[in-house]
Image (cartoon, rainbow, N blue to C red; front, side):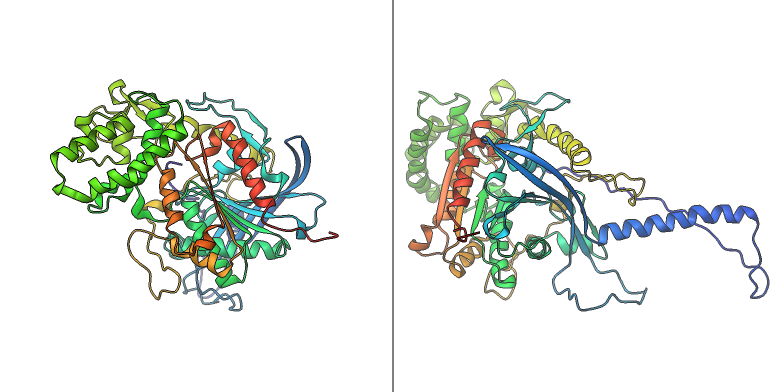
Length: 557
């Protein structure tokens, strides 16, 4: 989802002064001082309570039930936080008693876990689920995809304002797995504390390490080490999953049964949003073209509109990898005849004007496409889900100023989760924090401070440039040759185009035999595949089948 930024809230502190009169003698104070001391003591107690709340694990347990495809499931829900520490932290070292020392950084990570009642852990898979950002909470997958309750939103238009319907989720994954929804450090009801807290956790490797530590700690605290284990990450969460899968095996001795990816980006050199800033690297334009074509098809902007979307996209994919790639490789040595022919073909596949394509030198980035496809109507298409569209903010601009899809449904998710968390999960109103109100942070400002450097497996130093975690996922698959990987993608995703994910999977540095462990599925939806109800049902069925097919229950259990 689109980033948003929130100002932090600082609690005011009451100060009390102590009067000492005479030489070394404590003199009795007037009654007014005693009255002042009371709120000061209460404030100090409140501050201590808040410090404990954000530096020690918390949990609130509730119960509920959900009906999934006709099956009634009773569950226990645990909402809470676990505390993770930076690299090198040693739990055998006692806290330093020197008050002049800086307080070490720590992250209180918020989660909501759902456990089906009456099932032994050995035969009950557990799936760790998270969104991306970086800097996003996991409210989107929680309330839109797999939690026991979901918010109802419009399919490809703006969802009307409150009240919103929060309903039983017939496509919750609780029918096949226990679920743990994890909010990234600095989001949700979790908080960062200590010195250099943002520097400590806002980075590709630091974030992955925090999730790795969280998962290992969770497995231990809840006795789930012997359960079949899965990761489910969306968007930047797929980047995170590649690293975490490898770190769990290498650093924690934890093998996974499966890694489930939704709307993948593992190599940021393939990003279409800023491809123009990386001249001589034309691959993003090639990989985005099929998603441009799908979007133009959906909005009926293609000359001689074909009826069969999938057949049409296969044709576009072939053109992208052959004639289009060859033309881009020619650079400015391309002949005028070839340039004209490619521009015409791009027009046939995307509906963009031929003259515009030529002015773009056959290279149209994501923002330009979103702005231009329906520009003659004064409308921008969505980035995360290009089925959505909305009025342009500035008809003279080169890029949209907002994402119509994010604007269409964010309010529904935010309102629904705030209501659900406080009234059903009973979390978010702790009396030990300030005045009893806790803000659920849907986004942090992590993206503005993120350290994108990454140390790939078997390297001695991080690479400072576009993140590429293909080696991490490949390493995890080589260490654990039974590890299965599933990629789910929406045709109408311009944030992480579907053909980009296919290309990346085809270029994992693994053997042909290991590549058979990868399953790829597309849906007629966008980045948030689950925003389309029919696609959510398909996603549930496909993921459920993947989970049940990648572990063997113990006999007699």
